[in-house]
Image 1 (cartoon, one colour):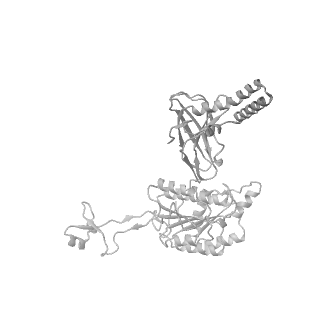
Image 2: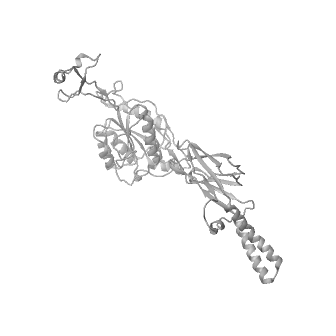
Image 3: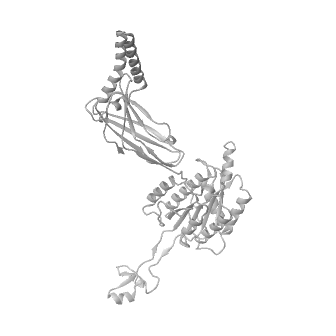
Length: 463
């Protein structure tokens, strides 16, 4: 809830120019007609016409002076529920206006500034507000495009009873609505070769790497005597035991290809927006499954921020941070994936889930090096050219049913996918309107069919 400081409608020290600047079209017309009538009356010597001209000219000036000198102190506040919404969902904005002066207000017009993409600018007409009175109004905002959108400042407009003059006062506070990518719940899928969730995906770090670098601790009641470290016991003069093995969270890297040259088309139904939404869904799903997730772009930048480590905190907090970063991610001007490949630490990345755009032979070779720097690697590859052509055909949408994509890629794209598979990737092409949960299951089936024998215990778990 953001509270605006009390604003005085007409409580500033501006001069007559500020007051005359508030004249409406009607007020300016009356003033011009009065001046013209007075001039004609002087030339023609008509006293009655002079009185009419003075009346016409004085009326808007009198209204401006009275309205300008009227002291109204009004406090406004805005409450945004919720402040973070998925694309295509609605948020409600509650406005509260309170008259904190000793005089009742006249007719008020309340207007809030919102970006065009969120809908029309809301306006409300409020009748007389008694001293100490409150008025509450609300409106809804909705956007199909992700991003951060400012709301405010709130404007208050006062009119005189004759409509000759109006004054506008603005509050200084504003809020921000964050529209994050849409996420879809993904099914639980396990890659073959994981043994009860252990293996490369779930590793354990032992405190005992050798007798020289062991880190002992004092013996506690109930410790297994087989873990007594006699050398440390002799050194410290008390019973010492080796520390227990500490489980380490499985790691996962989600790679989002944001190269401008890798995607065609724009808008909420484009291939790039599908990839952003897919990356968001994968991040949330893997965090819910207990993975330590790192979100990486083709530029080698980890989101959020530039740190190489995953964000700390609870899974919900980490997911919120990454979704906020994905809300404003845009195309990069990079030409390749080499920076992302360099950002992979080599062998310690665990599972790699990538959402890739169009690639040539050179970028396919770079992706092959990425596979060697991770454990299991899964790539979702939308053919952006196919998506753009699909949108041009009267809005016809090809749906993916249980992983089968309607509309096959061309020979060049097939060769690229074949190159990724030969490098060890699990590759799932995504056609226009593809449902990510179905592709997620298809990736699990394809990995199960392509897993070589004897790999038990070395592939990761992604569920």
